[in-house]
Amino acid sequence: MIDIPFFLFVVFAVVAIGGGIGMVSSRNPVASLLFLVVTFFSLAGIYVLLNAQFIAAVQVIVYAGAIMVLFLFVIMLLNLGSDYHADIRRFGWIVAGFVAAGIIGGILSSGLTQPGLLAGGGGGALVDASVRDVGVVGAVAFPLFRDFAVPFEVTSLLLLVAAIGAVLLAKRRV
Amino acid sequence: MSPTQPVSALGGIPFLVIMVVKVIVVFVSVITTVAFMTLLERWISAWIQDRLGPNRVGPKGLFQPLADGLKNFVKEETYPDQASRFYFVMAPMLSMIPAMITFAVIPFASPLPTPWGLVDMVVADLPIGILYILALTSLGVYGIVMAGWSSNNKYSLLGGMRASAQMVSYEVALGLALIPVFMLAGNVTLTGIISMQQQMHLWYAFPLGLAFFLFIVASFAECNRLPFDLPEAEQELVAGFHAEYSSMKFAMFMIAEYSNMLTASALMATLFLGGWDIPLWQGDNMWLGPAGIVGATPAWWKTLLTFGSFATKTAFFVFLFMWVRWTVPRFRYDQVMHLGWKVMLPTALAFIGLTGTSILVLDSLGVPYGLVYGLAMTAVNVVAMVAFFWILDRDRVIAGAEGYERRVRIAEAHARGMRVPPPVTQHAGD
Image (cartoon, rainbow over all chains, first blue to last red; front, side, top):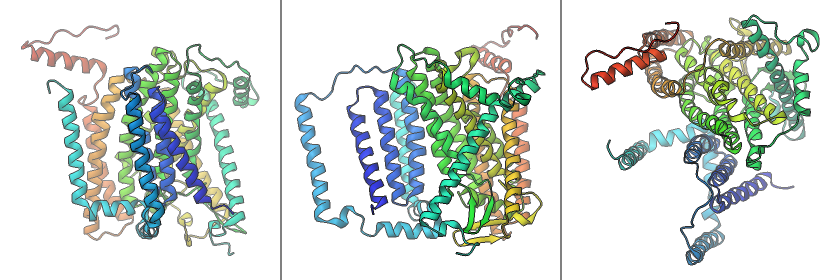
């Protein structure tokens, strides 16, 4: 008997990584955007497997449904072609490849030596318990608006400052 | 297994069989309804324009959808020379699939008792409920945008860009119009929202009327129906995003549009008109939780009656969609954006604040959730709605094109220091 959640996880993980590779390697901006949407969708699938349906829904609504549509709008508005000059030249690619391989290898080896580090030491059980108590939305809402209300509001203030800063930098005269 | 237990408790193969049967029945019903909605649209347009409408194929033209389907299947498929083939083929699929699977979370009748247990009349009662619909409908725009972009046609591209801007703008208002419902129901599952409306003995259209109105308007924009059909806009953009499509690929866009309409209608009926609830009758107030049935005893005739109630409400909204299409002219693009960001968004935000305040006040006064609670909210809502429509109606927020232009002229004249505004150009018929 195949473990169905594990099988689904492998499918979503492979699709997510494939989408990520497609996103950085395709020359057409629209194609790379759609690859990124595929990655977001697979991530949402993995969230559902972790019993975090609300996060999955928000992931699709916010990232795949709103932000990427805005990106698509901008790409189409500027009518970006597929001709571009690579910023990273031959030697840069080799260095970048080694750095990335080192990071991935480090994470994998630490995960193999300490199984609890990556495979969630009881995190899933905690999520299940809080979902049973307060529902899928409450499991996110209670920590966010009760336990961590101040950091949450400060973060949103930071985002507001960043948005205003972007407008100030982009416009000559405000 | 006792017949009062939900079938989901069965597990294994029997549950799988019941799920497959439900999926097939619902899918086939939705597809058939969508086919006949195209006929209904033509009948209603004919009725509104005082024509006869389709009446040749079959009795009273009833087989017209079959003829249309056959025609679409056998027509030639065209591919524009300069189109990106892959995206051109993908676009209709991306448009149709989200539209077809959103109906899965909508409960369409009260639970049906069977020898194997209670079957809830919804394909999947997800814990995230309506957020699932929001997530998938927000993906529908990719189909339209990709169709517009891959056709390599200026008109199609304009249609696709309008679609992306319009849908992102109105999704905000749509989501914010839903928040009062969540706050009042304390739940995001659609079965839970129906149950809370039954417990209040009042449909949410009364205590949350303003949210209901905003939701209807935003749904029209999300379905790209008139007066928000700018992505198609036959008169300016030929046919907008699907100008280059022929045969079944064109039909897939049509199926997507009509099934979006059907889902939006069912959603409005569920969220604001009590779903399958039958008004003024307590015999159908039941809720199928994981532990079993709560409230009235289910029966097969109750399932039939409640399905009739649900179908009637949904049909009303489908009719409303078509009625508006053949009555109201299209907005200009700047008016669409103006309405979305400067009217709908602030109103929805203000109404969230108002609903939250009323709930807080009523709860701290110790009013139990029920009819009195609902009537108090209704009183607040009536005041809010009167204020909203009074402001709208005084030519302050949405002016006609003429009034808007005049105000712009006067403002410009003032800015230049002139005292008399230049005369407004006279249109024929003024």
